[in-house]
Image (cartoon, rainbow, N blue to C red):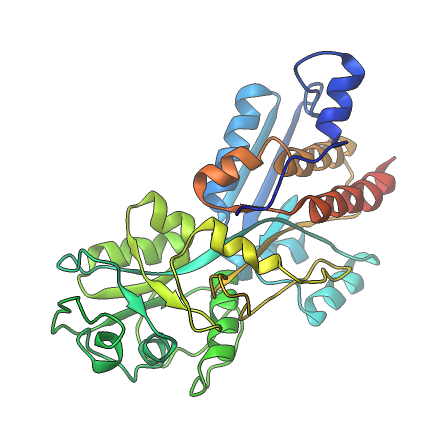
Length: 352
């Protein structure tokens, strides 16, 4: 099941109750402000949807977002060339220290949604479900398995006529939080993986493409291709995605429900930097993670601080419907409450 997102006592419900009206004052209504952000392509379809919906309802609020990858997003955030950054890889100790050295304060890092990273593939002749064992997908990403009809793939798909065709593995060519999520899992699940887990790695095989958008396009254009993308990109573009063997030995079809099991039994760190490289749940999809907004404790323009506070509240409340529609995983209610309180305390207090 998707974890609950209706939170009694949320800001939306409190304001509606206070006004006695059926509509909500989100905090945007009296603002005339423009915000710029950049970073992860993982949440880009959702952020673009949120920002468009906000602008339609509140024309005085314009939010632009560049899907440039988590690596470039963190860099622009540290250089303060944007009002907010976005990353799927939590800030490293070195990045946090760089922020402290420049701004004399702690960075604000808060999650917005979760999601699955899938193996999207292009095999027109395969109409059935394609299953990949851990041995099979580990072999594909390491370059040890190079043909679609390899025994390691055929074993999990006895009733599927696999083509005798070379495998083209498509990976990211840019600094990427999706790469961090993906390689964090591969490093845990694949004994022979030597490239580590990071936003950029030295890939042992395959061809590169920029952004989730680039990988999705490359897979669509190349028969025999397989690459890793956030679930929404495969879902929205009708690209087939493999069913994967999880740590418990079960084959799990990618879905928001299966990805939401990422949170089961997890204690969320104080800085929200939760990573679960290989979930142990029986029904857990094996590759999933959070995406984060990066905010500054202080803004010269108080309207920007107010707008960002309102944006976080919007994403945790009204924005969950679009998140579910696009295939993302809204935050569990207790985590969403912590995020809202953190932003209110650390951002707004600094700008009063």
